[in-house]
Each structure stands twice: as structure tokens, then as C-alpha cells.
Image 1: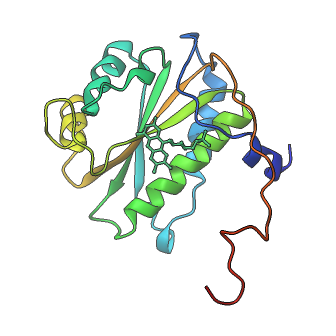
Image 2 (image 1 turned 90 degrees about the vertical axis):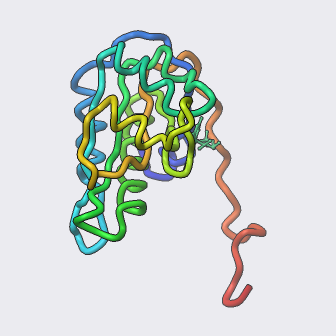
Length: 174
Ligand SMILES: Cc1cc2nc3c(=O)[nH]c(=O)nc-3n(C[C@H](O)[C@H](O)[C@H](O)COP(=O)(O)O)c2cc1C
């Protein structure tokens, strides 16, 4: 599939059937994340792949409004940036997330970004502290986001090809 078609087809999917994601597809999603480019090539991101349903259920509390999309998710991938390694962990982690989200879409999987940074958890703590207690990662690793993954219940309509001369594109000056 052409990259433009992939970009048009990619949508956030929050409802899953609860069926199992084939292991080879999950591994391709992980590989796409590991192929991400990063500031100075430092690759400061690591991930925790979670398939244990009890752990996924606990993660539903990572936001003040229960993360209901995790209810039927078959996997969740927490993306962490090493603050001791780089000062671009937010950008780097976002690229990892985007690569995985796009690859999931291309493989017919549903996925959605669950924001962690700057968001409180169900117990009022920062989402990062809440998730750290569940997953046990060290203090230098900062949770950027979690990708929920599952077999889509329904597939939303693809987006239309945008106009390259549209109102958001300024030529030469604002
Ligand atoms: C930085 C970022 C944070 C996001 N956080 C959440 C979130 O916490 N919960 C959620 O349901 N969707 C989240 N999303 C998904 C967006 O809501 C979604 O991409 C947007 O509504 C556009 O829809 P689409 O992805 O289907 O094109 C996030 C996306 C990004 C890029």
C-alpha cells in the first residue's frame, strides 16, 4: 500500500472485539516502533509490551476517567523515554508511538494513543507514577504514552486527501 493511502486510512480505534492479536503482527508493530528515528540518533525510548489481562485492567486507572478502550484490548504498549540519555524524549517517544500506530493500521489492527504526560490518574497522582507502580520501571524512565491495541470492532472511514493549498498552509510568510 502507498504511504499516502496508509496515512489516509489510519484512524484511532478505541473499540476492540477482544480477540487475540496474532503474535507475528504484534511483533511487526514492535519492530516499527524500534525503527523510529530519534534526536542525535540516541534512541532513548524503550517499551513494555503488556498482554496480561489483569495488568491491562489495572492500567485502566491510569487516567482520571477510566480508560475504557483498554477493556477489550488484547495488548498495551507503554512507551518510555530515558531522561538520563536525551533531552528529546517527548519527540522521540511520539515518533515511536506514531510508527506503531501506523503499522497497526496497515496490519488491520486497531490502536489508540493513551496520553499520560500532564494527565492525572484515577487516584489523583500523575499518570506516570500510577503506571510506574504497576509496571516497575526505574525513575529515569518517563512514561510518554500507552498504545492500546486490539482487533477492531468496526473500521472507521478513511480521511479524504487534503488540499495542499488549504487554509493551514501558508506560503513564504504567515
Ligand atoms: C498526543 C496525542 C494524545 C492523544 N491522547 C488520546 C487519549 O488520551 N485518549 C484517546 O482516546 N485518544 C487520544 N489520542 C487520539 C486522538 O484523539 C485522535 O488521533 C484524534 O481525535 C484524531 O482522530 P483519528 O486518529 O481517528 O484521525 C491522542 C492523540 C495524540 C496525537
